[in-house]
Image (cartoon, rainbow, N blue to C red; front, side, top):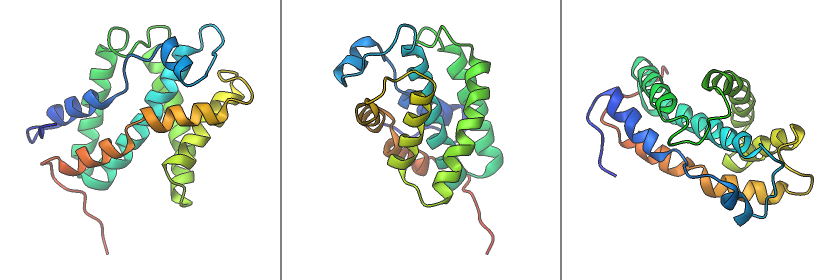
Length: 172
């Protein structure tokens, strides 16, 4: 993937291109998941929330805060524009998912700060999906495999690290 120009909109566009798309019942079936009616959108939203968590983490690590914040604002606008047509999240309202995301990100952050890796964070996402009744009991391993395959953690980190944007600085 080519590097975006040195502006937040281009960076947001590059990150938007990494978001998982085309998630459907055939995707779930490929992983042996039989979702209750209407829960495919819930799983897609959870995948988006988890992907956005890793995007936020990468931006916080590599990009100066004001620029990273602007990238996230631009990305949110692109997500809302492609909500139904590209991301297939039409049954959920963007504000509802973004509000829910804040709660999940706080949980994921706690896990990350305690030394948890991408697998541990994904396992937490799966636990929430089980608790909410999106996933049937006994499908945790299948759902975890799906998340580890479909959420582009490494690609996000590599892309953000390569952005020609002002770098985050840390005291000390």
